[in-house]
Amino acid sequence: KNRTSKAEAGPWTRAQRQRKPEERDRDRDGGDPLARVGEMFAKFSSRSKIDAVTSSKDEPTPVYALQELCENLIANPSTTESAASYLIARLQNKSVIVKQKALRAIKYVASKPDCSSFRMAVQQHAGVLREHASFSCAADPMKGNRPAEQVRQAAKEAIHAIYSTDSSSSASRGNGHAMQGFGSGGSGASTSQGGDESARASSMFSKAGGGRDRSGSGG
Image (cartoon, rainbow, N blue to C red; front, side, top):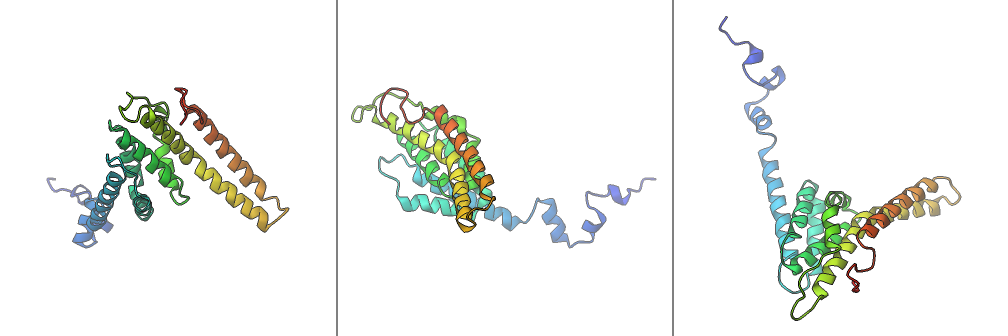
């Protein structure tokens, strides 16, 4: 009566008990340890690249650094959400320069057709971008209101990028199909879908203040 049944002996099923010990340990630990290490390294790499492109130095971000960030995210899709969240977190930095660079990085990555998962991840934080579309701060002694204007403009461009790139790609694909099969009925659905996405992008861009500065200043 005091004997423990096989079912109660542990979490392993019969098939799992018949596997090699190292394979059972790998399942219990949540997957391949090497894969987890690789993912951790990829996340660290993407964060390092984000830190590089959003530094507080008052100098332009090199295009090659932005391209390296894109390539890193494309090569490691599992890090996309964490990278998007980290870029959004950079917007909480008090430095206006960091805010500008983070928004421009979002726009750059989101504008790439191969980064659709990044666009979807950033869309979850669209409210933060909209807040920066009406950003204001104390005037800079040397630059005046220009830094705040640049943040607002960068935010509007980032919003446009995360919502309009997919619709532009869909429209391009639809036009391509129309050219290949001129007169066919297959292009109607693509055009309609592209129109819906374009309308959505326009709506989000309007909420952000459109092309005009809410403070009355040019972007």
